[in-house]
Length: 361
Image 1 (cartoon, rainbow, N blue to C red):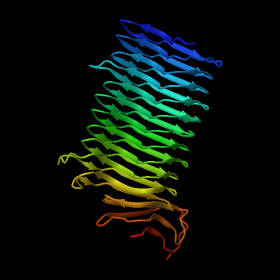
Image 2 (image 1 turned 90 degrees about the horizontal axis):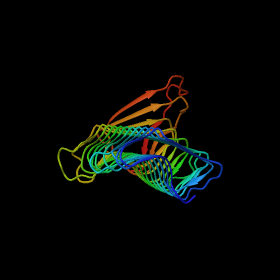
Image 3 (image 1 turned 30 degrees about the vertical axis):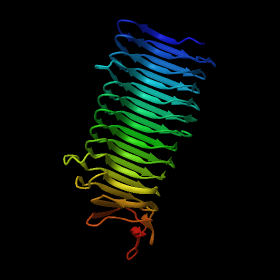
């Protein structure tokens, strides 16, 4: 089918509660959308693509807002991009509470957005399971001119995501409270909990179950603002470059804060680059109160720095002479507060010794 497929289409009002289902090996070479409006709100629309293919896919495509729309793709092939909700009014558009679910060996050649808007993109969700390949980037929420908050991306059992993954992106505003969960999957480029022009606050990344990231991981990334209260967990997984709890591209402003970020390593996490509690590319003056937490044994990193607190949790599987964290290069932990806790039923005996941390330099 060469023409586009729309559940509902309105020129001057809203487009709500429409549904489109494409299955049985159908091929749509143009766009598919649950509901489209040129001058209104697109809300509560649904697109399902099952064992079929399409170009761009929109749960809802609106002018002023796109809310509560959903896209479900199973065993599908998408030649361009997928949007749970899309709103492009230049003055006040928003994409909120949209949902994208992609499963069962599907392939997407473009990028995937839970919600995309010129202004706020909040509370969108995007999940993948057993997807063969995503050729471009993955974003829970993406805002061009305002904020991106409380979005979530879950990637499980995906062969490879070839470009960026971000919970929330705000090119001119605040990225806050976004989450990225990656399990048993591979990402070729960077992973961001939150990516904001202003502040990046309270974002969370969890990378588990033998996953790998070939470039950097940023709990929170800010262009010119604060990067605070972000958390990165690497559990039995590998990062081939650096890990940052919080990161700011500083303009030298003394008010910028890179603080209260946490990085957690668990169960033989492997970081082939350096690990920073916080990072400011011009000054360390505002990098304070960041924490590194080590759980279990055989964790490894090239280097660690900019941490004021190191917490070690000794799990019950540790035995004498085990090492919890091996730093192959430099561990800059002067004046850091160090604490350790022991799990009940530990196998360690009286006078047994373990290494909390070893360093090459």
